[in-house]
Length: 469
Image: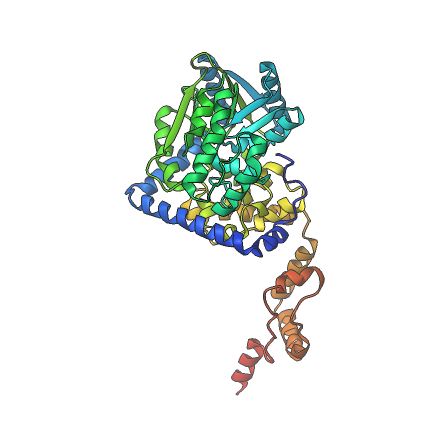
């Protein structure tokens, strides 16, 4: 994955800092609850929602089971329609392919549709190193780019910003990236949208290269599908002379008919809408446009090999799990140190990147295991199950030696009635010496709670004395 977040502290430290930001907590609470309530209303209207979820899960499971066959079918269909398919094993190879394709056009500027895959591989940074500027055209992504910021939500990357902050960003940074913000810009949403529209229109009309991702790729026909809410994506997909789409290999659906299921699931789960405002579909090269499809692995086949963890690849990036997660609502997306925040990020990121850092080791613990994420997932990903599975992997790797020793000692005591009774009597006699806080590395257990003082007499001894009477 991208090195964009390398150097981030472990989740507990980053979350602790974020929780101290009152403005951030207010922005997150307001936005997530608004989306959550809209989603609940439109889902309640769908009498067969449970059946749709089951169908979506079954279709994605079938894709993962036969991924090699569907990928070959997709490649054949795209090339038959005049496109060209490139295979990228990792982020480095994907960035090299895109760089070569852009260089071949002679252009030094590209426009982008919102794409998590390109964020995952750090494409913007790779292009910038070679003197090529990538302009984000999704409104929220534009806000993040102008603010020299990072996305914090799958659906609404700038969810951590309120409209007053957005106005300040536009006034400060728009001019450096193109057309400046209008004089006297207010924080009225319509005024902000108009400022963005004027700023972006110049890019749409001059860009010769567009870069996109895809929500779905239909193996049967080679059709790619992008869902968005503003229409900016359609401008990027149709106006440039060269279109390059970077798509994760798990984004396939087998047939055109299968797409129907996800066109009902995704809008309701993501934006709380019955129907997506802008849905763009294209098959191969159209109207003289050169089309290139870059199929990205970047750890996905490794995830596929894990019988429990592979269900994370069913994700359709709706963000419903983020909007109901009590941890995300308070900590925000930046604390996860990845372009995939929230519950899905806590299970997907460490599987893609591995447990090579403190941050990735901490992500499976970034959850209360309340199960709200599982309840709302439109493709029935059992996120709590995967979290526990990954926690077991972290524990087995030996990184939590102190905890393993403590659990081993507890198992020995709890499995021996004699040792347990002796320990209880000792704790009762020394109850006055019980500290309120644990020292050193164990302090995290008592940062928000006191150690309860042991009772003067254990239940075992009390029961024995009662019988003697």
